[in-house]
Image (cartoon, rainbow, N blue to C red):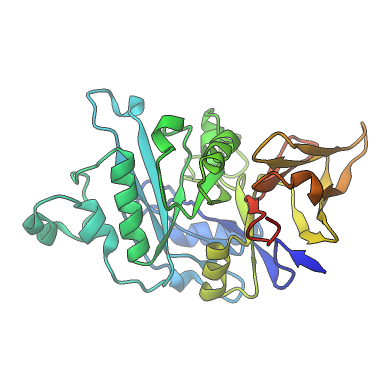
Length: 342
């Protein structure tokens, strides 16, 4: 019997889930962003402007879908300059694109502030709200987000100067950015596989995405253009808001800088992965039972098969595909107990 880890039904839609427009600190309008991303083969875009929760459904057509979202910053209280302070950046995605809870403004931005000030200033998104940088503060924000119908993403931990002690107690993230292209362009260490593994080994069950976090200060083709370098392939039955959000909730997606994963399934005690031409396909578990299928020099591999018996004492496994340019694709962790194997 074949059990698909990435769904058999539906199709993969290319998505950028972290994007900024002229409504906050980006240099392109939402309309210009749609034109650029659709031209590059994207089907899904979430314009996650800072402290701006906007419904961009007016941009949608039969081949293009926007996901309603925004980005929140929780900044460390310190006398240090801002660029030396630790921070936690979180993207939120509305499960209902017409969500009118005003969670972003009434609850989060003015969290713990005077109710009258909240009443006077809501909808404006000013910068003087109280930020609470701690696991307790972040977890409270995540709890409120979930209660108000939002999925969440833990953004660029390396750029945010966060380490294991900072994020080990976070609870409730839907996913995290395993790769952030803008951070890579800036020179920061942008591939956060170690952070993801740390969270998994601490018992956090969350998915992974790759994003641009684009602000478009430089034109397309410029070496510092921060668009089109990190993306998420979402497997959904159709290009509708409900179907895509359902896929995000279930983890039916993977992160990529370039390589594509076509199939991932379990059959007859083995895990099978097929993909675009690659140099290496790596299976990473909780422990040390790593497995790697590698191509000979000048050749490539497009599939890998792993024995599940080798994983009987593990809790989960995940995969990375590395192409000839060193670009990676990464799946979420798949748990043996969820598959009825433990």
